[in-house]
Image (cartoon, rainbow, N blue to C red; front, side):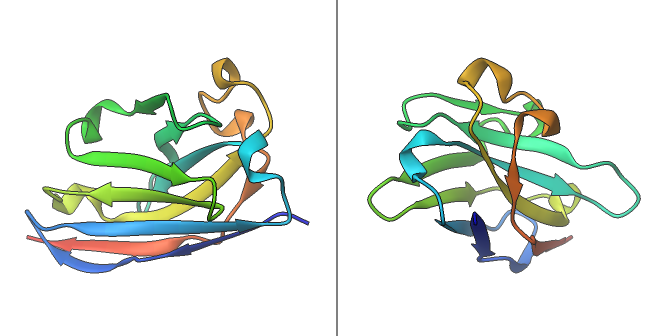
Amino acid sequence: QVELVELGGGLAQAGGSLRLSCAASGLTFGFYAMGWFRQAPGKERELVATINRSGTATRYTDSVKGRFTISRDNTKNTIYLQMNSLKPEDTAVYYCAAATKGWTSVLNEAGFDSWGRGTQVIVSS
């Protein structure tokens, strides 16, 4: 059974930084593309960043480009989301997700198979 556990959420000031991590178990990690999603109160869940199986390709939603960096360590079965220059609009629950589908298919929620429970990020102005 796939398990994804997010850590690293919390409270930050605008302009500050946080680093999220997601530890995966119950899967052959290197076979999965991975992603970070977020859901703000009253809004739909949105895809923030994705990374391919080897870590050589990434994608970001426009609102976080240049500020967030997704990475992975396949020796530790872990992905990371480094969030810099945080803004109040980054406040959301952040979810880790895993996908067995190919890189061209992981463009939205439908492309992902397994989800973590989420970690709260609050950015104060």
